[in-house]
Amino acid sequence: MKFQEERAYWLQHDSDKAPDMPFDSITVDGVQLISRYAQRHELYRMTAAVNALPEVLRRHVVSIYCDSKATHCYCVKLDGAHPDADAIGKMLSAAFLGYTKDECPGGHNGISIGYGGNCRFWGDVHLLDIDPDWGDYFDDM
Image (cartoon, rainbow, N blue to C red; front, side, top):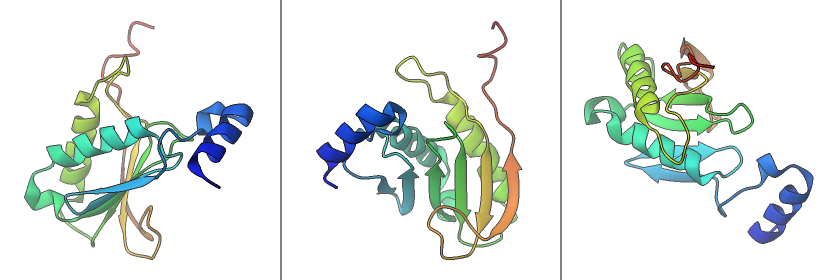
């Protein structure tokens, strides 16, 4: 299905799934960034997070997948089991928390980190989860 046709279909049936760009992934400094529903703002957020990682950690990140359906929920695939997995997770969490744009608060609904396997989204071996963090955004609600 062509981009315009797919977008028109989803806008008519379930607008949350409507892609706003004709591709669902990009590669930034060797890290594949994937948005489940081809959402531009998700790729921007992931790009900012990758750019916030020091190169010594970034080179171990194979991909970051944003599950558009779960909203700001990320799966990070590393190139192997690293003692730095926790540091990578914490730095990505801080980067997502610090990224605010277009009325969207900074934060995330969780980050899962793993490695191995053929899936482009996440690894077969689960290493750790970073709990959701929205800073103090919801404190006043």
